Length: 250
Picture (cartoon, rainbow, N blue to C red):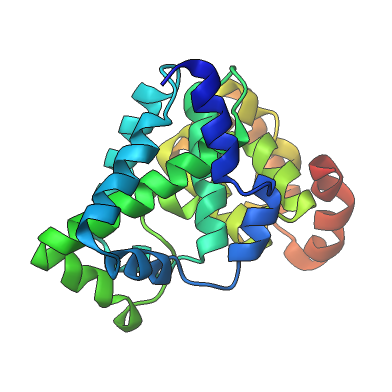
């Protein structure tokens, strides 16, 4: 398959829908249901579907796709993973690929193809791995945020804030992204440091986010610890959130 044939096949795979329309169509449905639906398919057709998705990965995407598929397959061993909303998970896959390929642009059909590859891969593992199959079915006994990187959609806080403004990321997801960045050190990435004073510190002061050693490291480097006193009054948090950092997501 040459590049032009691959491009045409990727577009055909989307059925003429934009990625945003696909996200909206999937929201409200558990991702677990999609995997179970594929699991009920016939073996040969399922294998052919995975092979098709793999063939539609471009050379530029190949390394990133392999890493993302491996990471999500590992995370799927946690029963909390299966509480995910399908639309939210597609957004997460979208941003995972954006982060991996940055600064190169991401082709929307490529995101949907990766989503299909992940779903097929998980269904195939559930077909052959009894323990994994039990984990897939155990989600109703668990609740809470998704584990690890899958609680967040992107490492870039600016992207997350903008996507919250467009509705692709919920406020709950946005705060999970912020906390993940605080926990794993992504808060110290160059592009993220800009948001610490106007966004992160007020949310920490209000008790919405937990402070971490990474945030304290930043405060020590910049002398911002002195600002902590004035920020400890969370009483006006609602108004401050909307008038101060809410503008940043537009």
